Length: 192
Image (cartoon, rainbow, N blue to C red; front, side):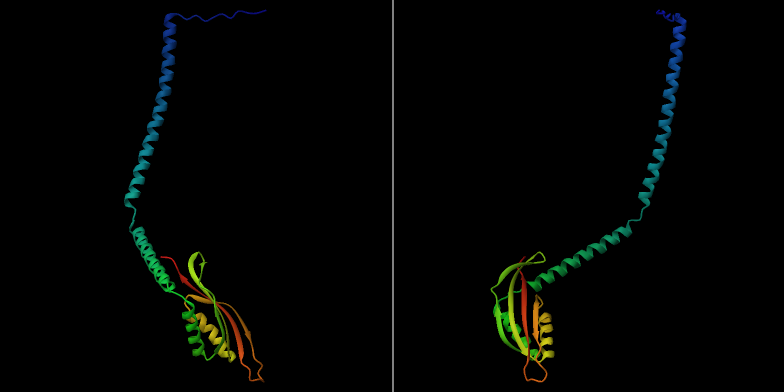
């Protein structure tokens, strides 16, 4: 069996009182919400003022000094880079390289017995485009002079270095000289 539910019937004054009660509850809820918003807005305003005061009172001279130092370091580094590029920007040819090799050999008292150079080619040295020439030489002399000569080659060619050396040490009881077979490479900067 189905029961009928009685509907509630309100009189006009009862509906007005009920409507007024609902309006008061909604109004109170809105008041509480607005009060929370006003408090939050006040707190945010206070925080904003505090942060603005901190920013205004911040000492930026330290950062300015640091920026000036970094700018100076950058200028110094760029100047050093330009100097290195100028050192590397020297024309190379086989005659100049062989003349320098004979000059170094004479200084260290060794004799160059075999000499050969490659054609000038292009290569990248650690990402820098360079012209390159290879040199193969054999030098004879006293062992200490040969060792000094090898070190002198590395020191006197600012844009070159020894790739490999094989030294044949002469026996002490003979009049033979020690020999060194040297592979050397010289770079020059091709960029701007």
